[in-house]
Amino acid sequence: MLMQTKPNLTLSREDFPTDFTWGVATSSFQIEGATHTDGRGASVWDTFCEQPGAIADGSNGSIACDHYHRYEEDLDLMARLGVNAYRFSMSWPRVQPDGRGAWNEAGFAFYERLIQGLLQRGIQVHITLNHWDMPQALQEAGGWANRETCGYFVAYALEVARRFGRYTQSLCTHNEPWVIAVLGHELGVFAPGLKSRKTAMLVSHHLLLSHGMAVKAIREAGIKLELGIVLNLSPIYPASDSEADMQKAKIDDGLNARWYLDPLCYGRYPEDVLSHLGDDAPTFSPEDMATIAQPMDFVGVNYYTRNFSSSGNPWDVNSTGNEVTDMGWEVYPEGLTELLCRLHQEYGIQCLRVTENGAAFKDEMVDGQIDDERRESYLREHIRATHDAMAQGVPVDAYFAWSLMDNFEWASGYEKRFGLIHVDYPSLKRTPKRSAKWYQQFLKA
Ligand code: IFM
Image 1: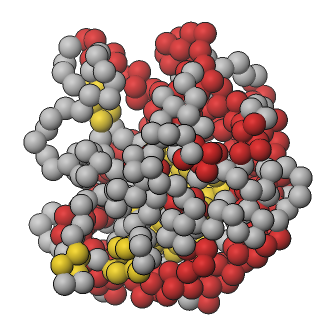
Image 2 (image 1 turned 90 degrees about the horizontal axis):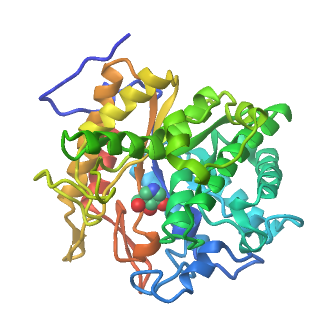
């Protein structure tokens, strides 16, 4: 049954199915801190932060939001928000310092406490295994460019599934493999800071392969939980209707979206992208492709903005006159509807989740309050955009706002704030913003 569209009315929670999942999301390196505590090993992001100039404000993740020590307070904040789900990532080097070999029981104990705290508050557990902070020891052995890493990842995935599967609603293998491959290995602006397209494409293949291997292994072990992957996707439009710009937009979409979706859904890489890559394309076997294309229980979509590509600089952003966030990203909720419809129609995906959506704005604390009206409006409009897709018959069953609280925004350090909850970094005090109060009211309805 299709849901009704309500073009001019305020949407409420009741306009969504009663079993719709409403959550907030974070990731380990961005919030936990405690990078030297209880036997955690180093991650590639610890190392990357040490490179001069790598992080805009020269910061690192050593304290971040100190969530490792303040998780109880953060769980209470989530419960007060009224979300019924929390998407977080596990820090691989916290539970297995070298990425192979011994497990770190103290690290697992932290996640046990966190998960039990969620369950006690009636909040579902959605775990991501790899939100970029891979163990530095594995990087030294070649990282994601080394095929052996896939096997180590499967061992880690199985261990997490065995320990926590019975408490967990969903397990996501990788968050945004495009970011790891391209920003981390081609452009070098994220960890591990390499600059080779050939390496980046090999890394993307190994991320996809390890996803498929992990899903297969968990299913074969008989552990029942929802398994999937999370992709960062945006509609990519040509900057003009010139033939060159249209071709460029098609290839950019190929590199960002089809390079991941075609193998995951159909077990093949897109031919036009393979020939565009030439010698930079990875080598792969038909068996690899069959492994990648494991049936998935869900595909997560992280949506923030749309992109334009021109035959010049691929990251040129067209000036549309629409509002932009503090990241310089255009606010374009219609793009989310378009994307969800495409994933359903073109790829036949039967369970879609908005696993991240949110905006960075410069927040100002006045008399102890943060009146982030623009973030509230961003969330409201994107929830409406999700509803619009559902009204067209697209099966979406969850929405997670990014992020629970301000945190370490990678190469931007602490300068960009995405949180519904403000974090005062010197004192680590948490203050819910207007957007948090709005989400709470929305969820109460
Ligand atoms: O903060 C990131 C997150 O780690 C991955 N998706 C995009 C967010 C905003 O840049």
